[in-house]
Length: 311
Image 1 (cartoon, helix red, strand yellow):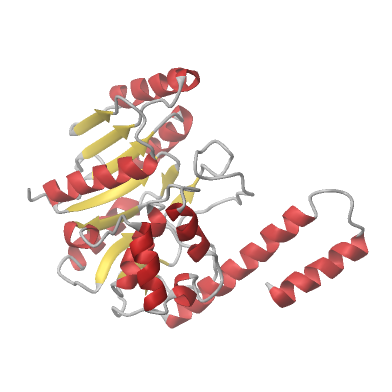
Image 2 (image 1 turned 90 degrees about the vertical axis):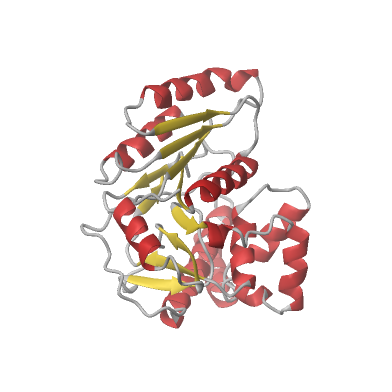
């Protein structure tokens, strides 16, 4: 099916207030009503979740949109199975897709950026996806490429999603064989290898870590904005896969990022990302280790110096 605007696929579960904020933000985009909208509603895992699930389903059923389809899961699929199935179905139908989860508040320029980039790189096999989120780092380019797709508001084509490998062990072994684990860990700055290992052994059910690995193994690029077009409002302990984090105040760009960038990985942006992730991990570990009042001020300072040197 040929469609000027990529379909928006929204995955929801049991957070009606988060979903309402996500949909309100999407509605601020000029292309929202022109885009086919598919809303996947996962089923409750147990009776205690039924009321929240039903409240969310009522919300999305009542939401005004001229080209909306609501897919009600009769049972709980889990996010990974739901995303893999939904993205596959819509990519097979439309050839491209924009994916949002129920805790993503997006910029009024989000859909414009996604659709513009989808059109621009549609036939460029070097590019596998478009991502709306970017780390809060000063001095990033207006737009840039990194090897590694994201999962906080993203888009791809059927040709890109066809490269997704669901078998975690298979891609883990291939990363090892190709000696890509250091790069997979974002130059040693974040434990993505451990995340993939945990997925293989049933300790998490992340589709995103497999998507990232699949793209890296094929040496594919993802376009990112320098200033984020997505804010994750689910880091409040309400989600199944996200814990509680300190969420900073978020300001979107006042304009859609200009997409005028060479199609190659930005070593400059990659270095900034790596430095940011190292700092993020160090600060998170420091918060965990100093969460009690047992450490003295001197001990905390010594611990901070140690983490800066070794983490």
